[in-house]
Image (cartoon, rainbow, N blue to C red; front, side):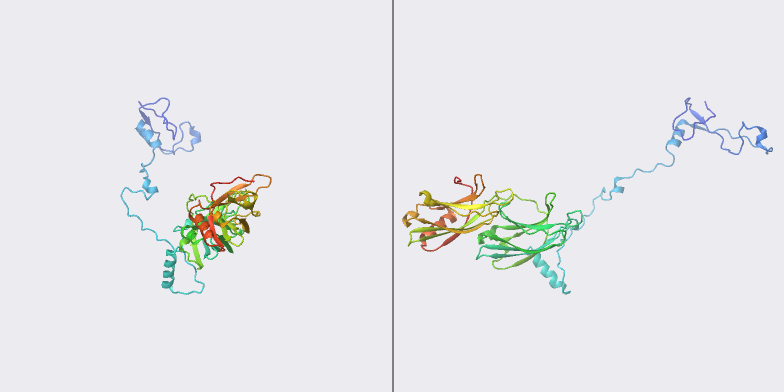
Length: 416
């Protein structure tokens, strides 16, 4: 069965009366329509041969022509879009060499061998350290350290930073440097520089001092220097940090560092309550024990402003009444107070060996109970440096003996 009328052009569906074959219309477009009258056709034309007979096609061919015109293209493979995905092994790229931060030679000296040798030595000493990826470049920090063993001080001079990462919408930052001794308290031993506005190359030239740093501390402590961006409307943002092991620093030698900032995973540090410098001296002529409270260093912060209002109480046990209790003046808003106050106990030398000196540091709160920061006990029942300090005082009459002691939370006395 066949029909002479084809389906509408570009149709993908069969006619309402489907059949197994369809007929194609003649392709001649020059012949007039059969419905046109002879008068409208113009002058008579020569005889036109009859149209060819309709070509019959199957229904499957019809759908193939309308639905899938043209040749079938190959399906793209995933390797065409991601060249790294191959079904055969490839040779891995060579490892990238770590780039060493180079300080520009202002004098224009072209001695490359000396410069490269010097850079290798500085890299081995930890003075130069930088990221090997330009996308993670955070900037560099220039600073110097000096350990004064005679006064138990660590001088940290923050010179400048270069090429810091932009943290604000204006493409700049408001940087400052925060110092922290590890291990140590999170708030008690932090120092910081002033904040410089709208710059990626800040120059501080500011010296910060840690008091109460002994030679033993220099062998175990690590100095952490963090560069942060100050944000008044939100939380301050961390830019990068560097760390220096203090055991590499020689006493009395000022060492300069040029280090690239890094992002180092935070580590948990043990909590310390601070340290106190105490002097003891027994005066034979007066049969008195002179106790000096000189200073405290990196105390724990007890107030919401990040500081404390510390004062020190001392008690000579067994309790001798009001004559055995003293307290220093209160120092406002500081974690490193200086007292330089002395107190006297009249006690025979032979009884002093049976006594215990309790020293406690407190945070003063107006109209509220004072907060205990930390304490230490010196006496015959003490151990380590505390016992050694007590024995040296009893042995060396008339000589002032000074020791740094670590404050702990154990055995906290009752507040006033």
